[in-house]
Image 1: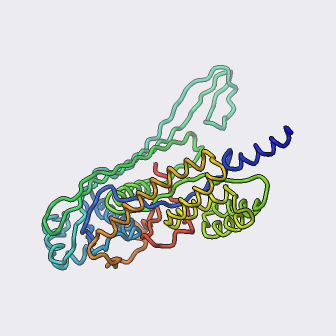
Image 2 (image 1 turned 30 degrees about the vertical axis):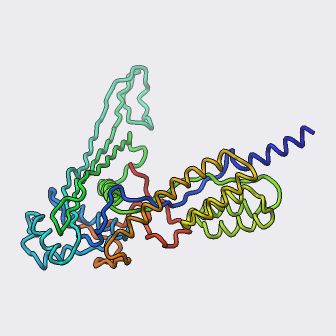
Image 3 (image 1 turned 60 degrees about the horizontal axis):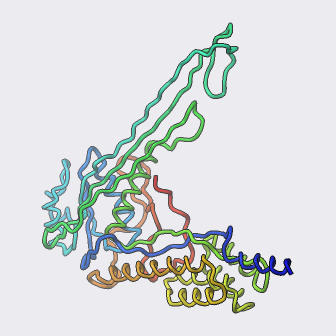
Length: 379
């Protein structure tokens, strides 16, 4: 009898415990509502040296990937108002006037508050009594007669990037949004042990994070969310459910959904399959199906995981509806066509490129059932 209850307990643990995890994309609304803004132009930011042009390139990469706005090239504004773009910087008022003449809705401008990286190398010397003069792997040592001289080298790298931006209504001159985005980096290696990213890479990564923050403030965007997959230990549909979990962990939600559906065909009351199919429905934006699957999962077994997922998906559905509303509030309501071609943007100061870093941000209705490679973690 005890063995029978033990088997039941193990089966129920299939809904949670040390369950596998996967990532899916959820649509989030912009922090700021900007109805009627469909076409924007990004102009060079104010900043030392080439930092203003570099900031503009990074923002264009992010906005081009996001695709919420139609992007109008700065060159188009310069054609109408050449005086707006001189070697000493951008004249925002003239740029806004040029945008108004071209029928552009808003101009994204701003200032590079910080764009710097600093290296410090420090050597620490001390005398060690009782040493034998042999070299150490952690540093250098020399000496004899029981006295050693140790040297340790510390290499520290600190960097910061901060962008202050404002979105200006080209029709009224009103500032629609004004915020600041900042990110920092700190790294250290001792005696050459470990890895330190290059100076240019550090700055590019920080700038990409700041640009991503700017886009999140003004445009709907997708972000990755880690979710827990339900599992089972035995019974009908076991192999299909496990196969689906493996596929979801690799980001192939379409194939995972097919595997979980097969598990459900073998056992219509497979609550783990219902739970995971709710996640697959969320990926597609089919929240009605997600709610239905979760209700059936909870009816079969009211696992805490299933209730937690239902709460999270309810929030996700509200965010999705708000983001779709923001997209539909653009004028014109049709999907815009950028005057800029999406893709890598060449930095003015080097041969490096700013790829559209950050989260994959397809438009509502795009196929996101195959999760792209994870984005770099924010520092």
